[in-house]
Every structure is written in structure tokens, then in C-alpha cells.
Length: 138
Image 1 (cartoon, rainbow, N blue to C red):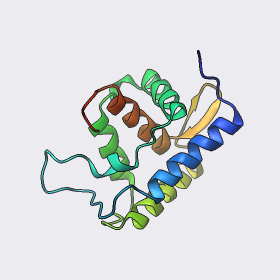
Image 2 (cartoon, rainbow, N blue to C red):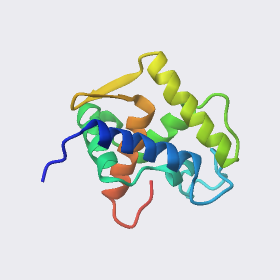
Image 3 (cartoon, rainbow, N blue to C red):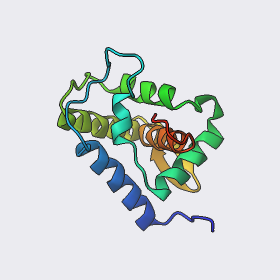
Image 4 (tube, helix red, strand yellow):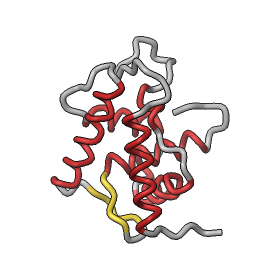
């Protein structure tokens, strides 16, 4: 069955991304972990909904050169200015500011008729890639 985006689905997706960013499942995130083998800190806020998977797949279809979960998360982390630090609430606020900045600066992509910020699209794409690799996080 093919998923067709609706306003309600998009609102749920964006609400889910915002909720996951603002209320991560655990505390104490840092953007630059000392151990290179550790999961990327932003992997904790990846959306895990079917609609996020659709957005992620569409983004990767348009930008196949970004088809690496770690690279996508690094791109999102690098765009967060100033660096939000370890507090989950700060991380969520930084992502929300970046999404707003994406729209203000027209850093958006059109996916199946919907306009999505590059930050949101990259988070969804990273989630899609992480889901495509059983047993591996982003």
C-alpha cells in the first residue's frame, strides 16, 4: 500500500519530529562524543514513524549523495548554531530554531508536493537509513 501525504500526516510527522527532539528518550546528549564508535547523539531524536520513512526515502531519492546516516546527522549537527550543548531541551530548541531558519532562508525541499525543511528531511532520511540496517543505529 502506497502512503499518500495529507495535511494531517504532515502535521503528525512534524509534530513527531518536534516531540522527539524536545523530549528525547534519555538525557545528557552531547554533539561530539569522545568515543568515535559511540552512536551519534542526534540518533536519539530520529523520527520512527511510517511518514518519516516516506519523507526520508523521497529525500534520498532526490539527494542520493547524502545516503549516509552519520553524514546526515553531522550535517544537521553542524547547522545548529550556537552549539546547543548537552541539555536535551537545548538540543530540541536548537533544532527547532534551525527548522525555522531553513524556512526563512528557503532551505527547503519539495517532496511529493509538500515543502519540508532540509533539517527535517535529513533527520527523516537518517532514520530511514538507520531502519534499513537491522541491528545498527545511525
